[in-house]
Length: 400
Image (cartoon, rainbow, N blue to C red; front, side, top):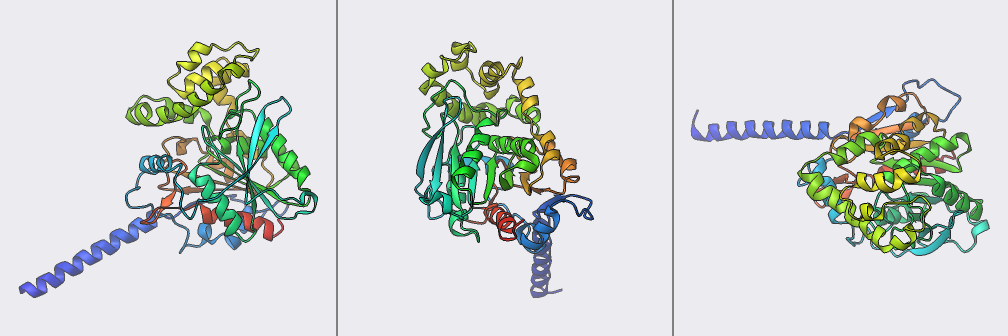
């Protein structure tokens, strides 16, 4: 074989190898869709058919995949990048909210950031509303929430009005009672949903929660069951098993010790220090010095959350706060999106079998997405925007 033919042969071999490698990479990047395994049920809403008919980004073999951005090919990188661009503003996220402060029944305050704005004709408005719940230390100002608000308001078929919630003390929301938000207590969400549904009686409501906000939403959907005022719900990076998530975040290691814990604690410490006088008014009797010296989220949960709700320690609180058991009780279209490489809420904590036995639910697992990352493309874009819009549109436009 002469040199020319050798070059051709080597080139062809390299091409075949690259093609095979690329094909395998794409194949491994396809979403895994977990649905009710009894498709013959007729008595309940079948999310199975809803997704197959109306959500091509989850069900179409040519579209249902997440190719991670080349430099974000692990869950850790996806998570770090998501945290790093929290305050980024671009054409996908550059929005301005209209804020409303809402007093809760115990005197606490939750803020609602509306986009494009709160409707002035409350009782007559039929524009659907998407409620968004941030995670621990998060707020409506995070990049993924601003981007989602803009996408749902401008690019979805339903053209949602978006109500992004800021927990007590978060997102520049004043702390007006000693009670802090947590993964166990769903009372604020119950009150907010009730308030919005009463203010907009003709509008249909949906809700999406991230991380700890996803856990709250899952618990809420289970508690409400058939009586939920929400037409549909989506949870992203949900810590269904808070014990597993708590242990993952508390395990000593470089990433936890130098990155994840310091980042979360910096946010929590700002809330604590800014509102310490109000927290001291609690009748629970917190050890304030221990709270301010806390180095880990579990320390804060030990000294504040567990004590406030009568648990002996954070681990007892995490067990009680877990939302995995709530999946059985969900009676509205419900979609969960998780990543197999999530370093904060490990995939081991996702109750896969429960999604196989509840026809109202569906679970999507992607191989690479990290914790609230899910970035795809050379210029990273958030992948879940389209599936979220498709799912909500399918429920509302189809009058499910």
